[in-house]
Image (cartoon, rainbow, N blue to C red; front, side, top):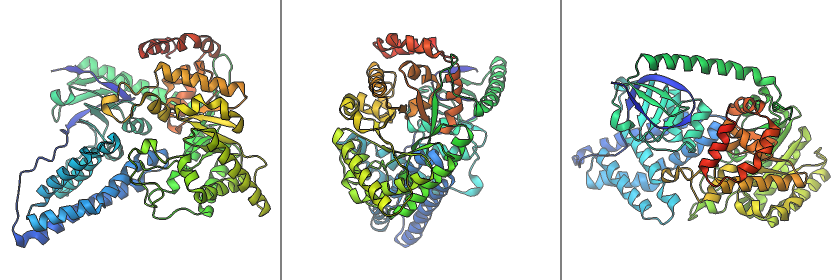
Length: 572
């Protein structure tokens, strides 16, 4: 019998397939003991399962590249570290050896022990790591019972579950899953961002999904409007076919925009830069006609390794980006590493009570001045191969920028003295991600050459809301009057001083927000290459003068609903 189930669209696309229902993870294992003589065999079985999971995670990590590797890699790295954690492994071994428990029940006991430790922590970030423990132990448990012959395929199916981790999402997509429906989650979570990059339809917040949908049911999923139709009728199937053809036409039309200018309908040119962190990203950005690289992440050089990259290794990576963009500007963001990212080098602190408010971004770089000078030397050397800019993350004060400026000046002088061919001028920019930086911008804008607004963190810090906290899904939104006023203030301050300003957070890559950002006066966007053509199309359909004239009305909005109503006027 046909039923329509509401949800929230998180990644556009239409899918039709059979449901694969996965109930919320709970390691519900009865107490089970083994004979003393069976201990060694049980340990071998457990460690074989752990090795299987480790191999799978490494294989997935190797298949990823570019921004996808950045989003998923952090979670895979964290899960790999948990998988190798001595407390987890030694605890499991001890339970089997001394308690004579089965591997199944040892996993259950060890999971509960670790979860109790994390649950007792005061910091919400560390409490949230319980989910990572569940995912890792859940993987081991599944590997314990896996048999190649009885693993049902998921290709062509639609996964229905409570939530899905970014690392798992990438794996599901590679296995042929057509769409994902979750009863929880947020359209602004890491998983949702990743799903959009993968072009995998995703509906979140479908609270009735697990109650109403059974294995094998036929589902029709619309990742745009969030509608799920259980056992669709003839009319639904006809609508699905029409929507599928429409999406195919849309992809062809987007492809034609690869060489078209990013220009509004009334003739105003807008610059679209690409976020990147690999040669593949750079090649795609170049092919799509990006104005340059607006944010090149350097963390990938430091993660998933046991030693720090030296100057020459970094130089070669940055040089290749400059060469790949053939004369278009490249913006290198200095190291944005903190305790929230897995780090084997010992560079980031491992015991920070609140990593989001800790030693990260420029704070970490200035605390490790030798490391920072090495990175700046590599960037400045690479500037001899093409136009390059330096972008400093997590700025919160004028003093930080002045310190970086002086160090950059020293490095430039040293390299010239050593005979290196480098750019005459290397622009220095600041990322505005902290409300303090936005408010205090007039005090240090004279010390920088350009600005980049990181909306992901700016939203989080302004609203005191973690985008990955499901309970705060409705609160974490860029459509908040406070955020729009901050954006307007930043852009006006930059324009008054003749400083270029771009938005490089997820907001820039969402075509729905293009009219809003244009209305606030933004002329530069930096976004993932996967969404560049969609944003170009949206901008080409905008009347710039009309949007700018409507900005005062937008800034008078008192709530999210009013802002959404304003956006509705300009939706294409």
